[in-house]
Length: 161
Image (cartoon, rainbow, N blue to C red; front, side, top):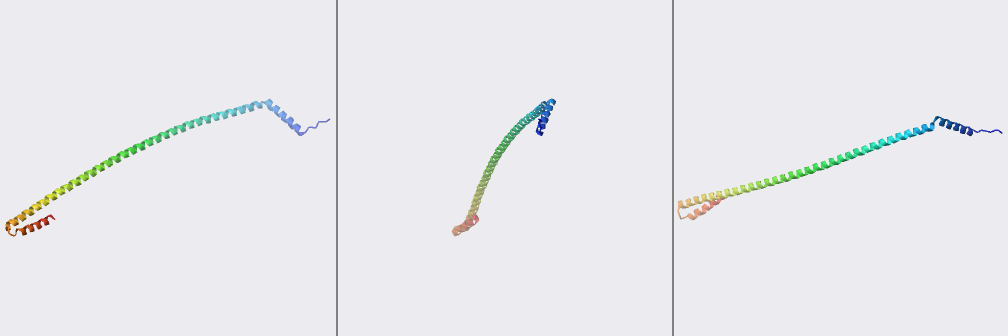
């Protein structure tokens, strides 16, 4: 009887021999070592990535703290500026009120002075007119004195107006 070998048989024998050669050369150990080396490299990269992430988080927290500090400082500056502006506005208002009060007092004083002066002038004019009328009455005598009094009153009115 003759055994007939197919191509599949030769492929199986070739594969078995290939596996035997690989085992003889130590390929599984080298493959395991390569896989272990790659695993160690990936672990190192992951550890480095974790370290960088922690650094980034710390840096982010630092920047957020600095931002918060800057915002607080800006708010304090704005509040101080508002307080100073309010103080300046109040001082300016007080000064304006004082200026207006002084101006009103000066105007009132000028009006009072003008009234006194006008009153004095009217009294002086009335006195002058009375003296002139008296002189005229006395110089012309008693008869017709009524006409002189009327004329004097007219002169007095003319002087006043």
